[in-house]
Length: 197
Image 1 (cartoon, helix red, strand yellow):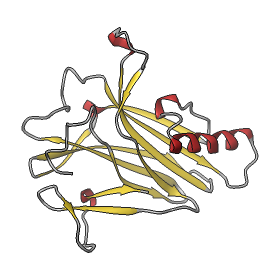
Image 2 (spheres, one colour):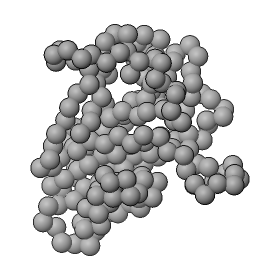
Image 3 (cartoon, helix red, strand yellow):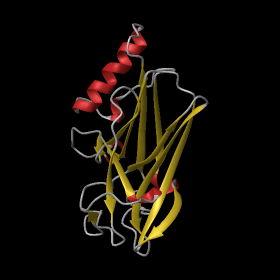
């Protein structure tokens, strides 16, 4: 993403940097970017209530339990845009939901006047056929007493199929100046990719 794009939307983007699923745990790494010298959102008093919302939904392909069916429906509704992460209710052992203050994220690498801000989730083993991760930045409007019908201002949603039949990952490569690389695939570093499906 070029420097010119950051901050032009209502809320900053979050990127799923990595998802690792093995027999003992599921590790999810997320990253957000802001300017190092004059940050647009990190440390802002105005955006102090801005939060990183994460949902991890898991289900079995042939599961018939009510919780499994609800988890499948949550994934379908999130994928179609019928609901947002803010509307998801956690379901024990199927749907997990996390929220972090964006100002509490850990500082990471700096590149081209940009700073990475990192969050990580480490879940115990999820023994399901499918695992889908969703993340977005959200701002709670309820405390502002505004005459609006919306409860939240939500940024773009990013998702990643961590495990399942439809595992499909593509990569967007960025040049050192932050612009999108349109040539053939090159060797990438951990923080230079955007995972999408």
